[in-house]
Image (cartoon, rainbow, N blue to C red; front, side, top):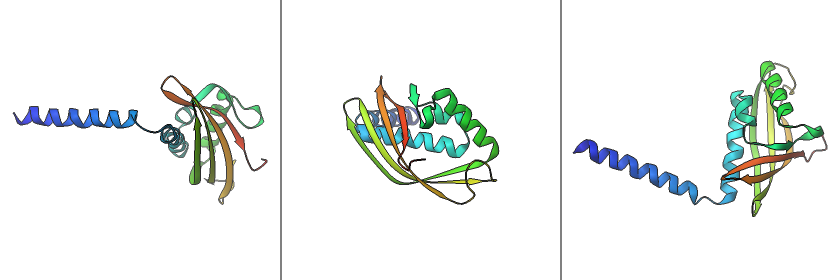
Length: 144
């Protein structure tokens, strides 16, 4: 009896969690997708950081998805990267979203990032594909 009650409670909590995710505002879904990328970058996981990139992704200097993954792999071999979010504003229109973020990027071991903190601003363009938000484009707002 106790085991079936425990199973019912776990199932109820799981279903409640799934329903809560489904009713998230699109802005929250985009922020959560961004946070997943941020955590993957800090963990040194290039595959995880590039997983949400749209197949037609474009980054700075025309960087595409495979190039972004190679760049991150090279960076992670040289140093540990820290990402602190100072500002995160998302605007959604239908299946498109624009996100502006101000970040502090830090690196250790003297590789591609400076030893001290570097504040940067980016505009990200997301596209909803199926039920997921995919990162379609990143532009630096710093002129770098």
